[in-house]
Length: 259
Length: 332
Image 1 (tube, rainbow over the protein chains, first blue to last red):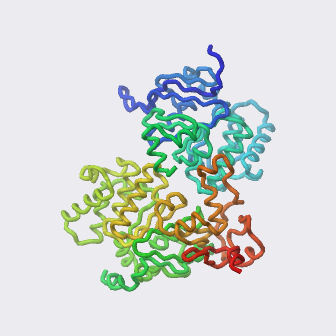
Image 2: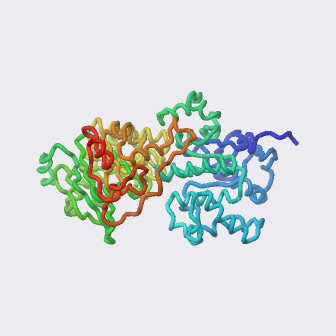
């Protein structure tokens, strides 16, 4: 339809919300537009309630927008039924959540949970899947014997690594990380950040990094988008935005971080 | 009560003095190995450490709420000159909530979900003072205003779930300071909050500290908030303080390799895109007695002696000490 751009994902004029009652719709996202280029790491900042997680839900297909366009590799995907879309996009879009303890099933081994998405996809033979799971463990810096361990036997940082492994085993084009380091200790946070950076260099995926920690965003991201009350109020290269914020809300954020 | 009043003047130099505190579990694990710290009146002291460093256990020991199976094996905790390690529950009630205010990490869990805000704050006064109902009400509303809560009359009638995270944290602060305590213990009060709200809460703690001369023990794993708030800082590793000094001394000129590496692992403007962590491995689970430097296995500068003996505190400059053998060599 249109010519190819360098955009991996593009959101155009998205409105989204959750219905309180049938008539009343709470608009969480209002006229939001955002694009993520290939191999770009976009940081998303915003306070609680600004719509960060809703935006992630829209992209992953957990939630259908009320109106607006979503383009993935220049193909419009918002009209696909959610189920179909999830199936089609799960190769390409993966997510890492804030709390690693609640993103794993406590009764299954790490290895099982690493393999599960591939088993569901039925793309590979069993032995191949197991080999891929071990490879993924190695990628995220966990020893092979973690394959047979249960989530409670891992520390928070190790579990977050495993969560990264679960997402990256699908070799996605886009990784959405929703506050992946905010529940971790300083040195463990540093480890996970180093790991994300390494993996981005190695596997070349785009990343939407959601955080309220400006220092982390500055460290990791190329571009930053500031979300306030459901719309992007500032967008641009990280250095530019941090040095010369235009929006009042951004200024306040950057000032309170002491940058 | 009277007994406390009498001992008030006994040791005016320090509000809180912890001497060689050692906390162990029934299994013999040493959770806090040897912590000594002193807080002067009106001072804000930061206690920094990662999970498992023993910072929360130290606070629990001070407040007297150690869980079952964990007990103080050695050492003294002097609060206004009185040893509070082995006091009765009645005496403890006279201190906690009265002379010792506590702010917990998770405000939504520290408040009773079935009780209105005003009543919860009032409860503190009801237990510790003989004020009449109207006097108490005035003071509850006054304190709520003091912590910058909006529309206090209306808010006092609300339940905790109707408040935002920042407001709930302010309610906790109001409860902690309503009796004009001598010491305020804040256990990671901002971890669950947004950046701007965090800044507001830190400002509020600072204002309370300055206006009422309340000493503050601030527990955190976040150097950036410690830097903004505290006068002095204790860095804890595996139940032992490894570096003590003023915030300026420790953050600008860290002497212990652990402090240095911990500071290095915080993302800053200059380190953009670079590797953050040079530390190996991770904190060990608490074990038996410490016979050598606990950080030796992860330390890039460790040498033979580090694995054989426990380093004592060496002075770097007045007021700045660190437990590392490297400092010994420099002195000679």
